Amino acid sequence: MNFCKFSHSSSSWIAFLTDAGAGQACLLNIDSGDQHSLDIGHKSRTKAGSRDDSPMCIKLVAQNEPLSLQLFVGYESTMLRQFDITESNNTMSAVSKRAVTTAHEEPIMSLDYDSQRQLVYTCAADNKVCCFAADGLAFKEHAAAELKNPGSAEIRCFSEQALVAVAGWDYAVHIFASSDLKPTCSVAFHRAALTSVDMSSLSNHGVESIVDEYVRQRWNSRSRWMAVASRDARISLWDTSRITAESFGGQS
Image 1 (tube, rainbow, N blue to C red):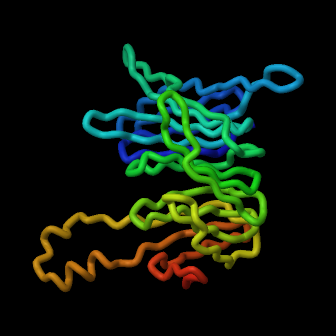
Image 2 (cartoon, rainbow, N blue to C red; image 1 turned 180 degrees about the vertical axis):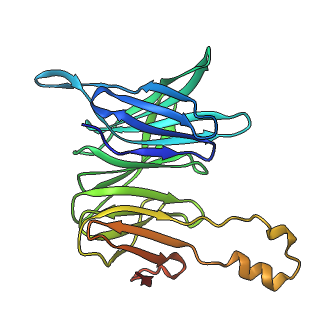
């Protein structure tokens, strides 16, 4: 079974699963067209013996100056792994760096990485939301939270707002503080399970040319929008500046 999962980094590289059952992924440079096959397979141990552990989600992270790539992978067995992407003889490969069996009881459905705090966030088919920090050759659980209802499609960390958003199968977006996963609020608009959540980023390009201080403040105070998709065939937009402990306003 192939999963339509891919991840793009701040560089020109994207990663996507080509054969999840066989643990195969592809690294593609969208500028040059170069492609590299990556082996991210994993064997899990069960009572019936060893079996292939399908990767369920991936996150590609680029570190600049010099450019280095890291790939985070969440598995069906609830394993979380981090790979360093290395290059030798013009061929790229994935080298396992650290791993942990998470507290999830169901397959990991989505993960995200906060490059500022160097934290990894995961959600799964269960009701747990987890946060991990790098600890030597392993991961250490940094924080955890529980949803009222099980099942999440996607998790996203928004560093500037210090928020984590989880798109739930219970039709709602659940918002947490990124530092300790303390619940902030939940918002519900859709009439079916959510499939995706993301947030706009504000470019500072051109801000240095703004001389007027009032105009500069208005520029920096622009709204950041969260986009939510659902199986009800709707996309909703939410103004994150209006987030409160109770609710925040939205448009659809």
